[in-house]
Length: 121
Image (cartoon, rainbow, N blue to C red; front, top):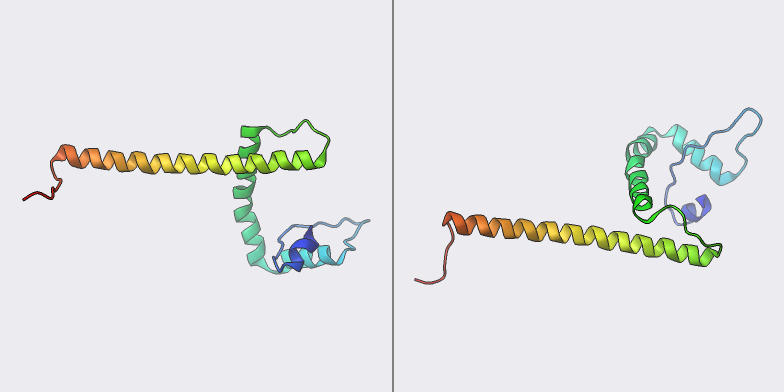
């Protein structure tokens, strides 16, 4: 996974730990570990931005469930993709209804206050 992002020039920020008996051997993992430990701004981005991603996945799991009762990988992948698409549509609908309700509220308030202009002379 790390190699996939690194080949596309996306910088990974992952805390990778090594134990006394087991060190980091993979070149990509060493690169990411060094980046996380050496450059403080990456560590700050990771610590301050991680909760947003974790919160999104948690909300999606609460809404759609965290298990797909299938053993077929492609079908499970399809379920996840459909779940994300439905989640995005749901968020879009909520936003659009909130914008329309706010616009309706503003029109009603302006109309009731008598501060509206007409095009007639």
